[in-house]
Length: 170
Figure 1 (cartoon, rainbow, N blue to C red):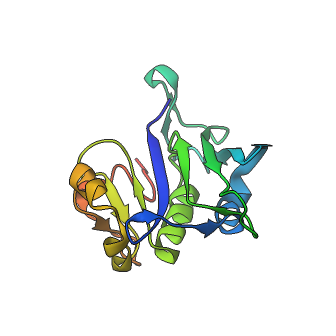
Figure 2 (tube, one colour):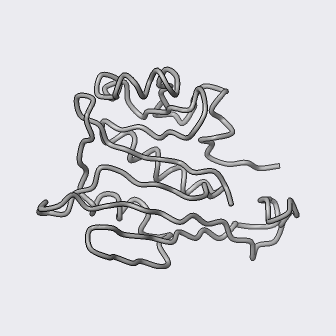
């Protein structure tokens, strides 16, 4: 199992809201399974690795270099009660697919809302626009480190390249 990533929308230090339709649209091409129970939902994302030049880690550190290789994530979220259209404040990704389309979707979401992607650890907070900074909870910044912006050209600080990269070609 891979690491967990979290995407959350923030407004003045409190959880913000984003239309569920926007989150769904960002990952629509990769959603292969959907479940909803009450206000909670689950999506399974799958991405085919595009060819033998791509490599990904398989269980027990075996390397896959086949066009048939897949990378995936389980996505969890909750719809905010009573919202029309349905709204959500974030997603939890169990596993971070090593695929450019996954990261491109995250980056588009980051650039379109006062939001952040983060993971456990230090220097583990990435934003897509500077306007997000005043909306982030202060204790989050103290715990994860200063937010590091992902610029529109797709570059970001080197410490985050392994965590929020567009591709890992070898």
